[in-house]
Amino acid sequence: MGLLDHDGALGCEGDFSDMENAIDMGAGTGREEVRIMTLQSHILAEQGEHAQAGGTFSWILSALSISAKIISDKVRRARLENVLGSVGAENVQGEVQQKLDVLANDVLMKTLGGREGVAIVASEENEEPIILRSDTRGVPRYCVLFDPLDGSSNLDVCGGVGTIFSILAYDGRATRAQDSLLQPGARQIAAGYVLYGSSTIFVLTLGNGVDLFVLDPGIGAFMRVERHLRIPAGNKTYSVNEGNRRSFPEGYRRFLDWAQENGYSSRYAGAMVADVHRILLKGGVFLYPPTQKAPQGKLRLMYEANPMAMIIEQAGGKTVAGPGRRILDIEPTAIHQRTPVILGAADQVDAVLAHL
Ligand code: AHG
Ligand code: MN
Ligand code: MN
Image 1 (cartoon, rainbow, N blue to C red):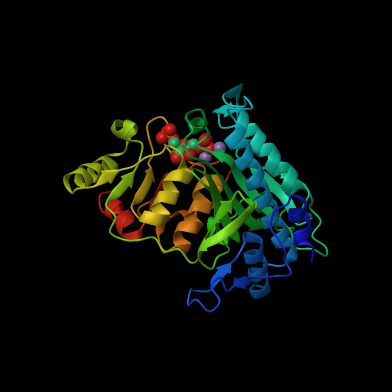
Image 2 (cartoon, rainbow, N blue to C red):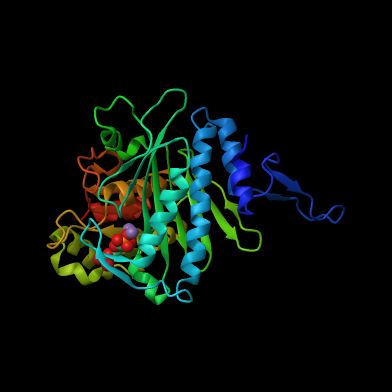
């Protein structure tokens, strides 16, 4: 199959006929064998193991990988090419749109739009989902939802930003095509994020653990560096915008008092991807509670909370909207709806819940 051809055209992912290259780096020297696994090789290997991860689906992941490389390049050149700052408009969320929000959105729309398996794309930046194909005959189709550039207000100060995505199966039986999008997060087939930080990181789950890839800028390929990530327990760190503390519900304020009396540290990047990535690797808890200004919190269920919840749960962590409210079980009623978020290592999420 031709997954290779498209990525290859961008000079990217190497030879797909070679699913995994085991290279003996030190024949006769006693040094360990080194395995090289690109994201594309990984996807093809997974495709071999999972019936649902067929070729059509792999093409979609390939489009996300290419988008990530293009957006990464744009983010890194933004100051030089004068594409920092706002476009002078607000998106459907009533938030200021950065020029790069628009650029990243266009990149994803174009790359995903060309994939036969994509039925609907829905973006945080677009008021309405875009229905590309609604015919399900012959080929399985999927809905791809994304936050093209998360934490975009960090761009002007060279802070970490990211892309978040969620993939659902398209249900051709829905009366209105967009109703196919309103599925609880537990039904996601895949989710991931890209962090444009000091390096470009691609984190992916296909529902069987979480794998981590790093973009090798020399060869233009995402290289797998970790398999089956597990969030460590016991890290006394919380990540929350404490500037909002006075408008948090009382239980959250009680948790913060308790944490400060019990030796917790605070870390907050102001970009969910950057904050969640730290928690995935180091443990701790991330919170975006309800506030007076945003009674349902600020984060969006379909583009931010659900994909991150799938990743966190797949890494052994926990994600809730409040006591007894698992994020992945929320039945969505609107594509842009918001939800409070508490996520991270299970022990740290439980420590928050004990105060609510
Ligand atoms: P976006 O840039 O996609 O609108 O998302 C910003 C979000 C999220 O990345 C972050 O966790 C949160 O906003 C930060 O909000 P505060 O500035 O209110 O802390
Ligand atoms: Mn966001
Ligand atoms: Mn965004």
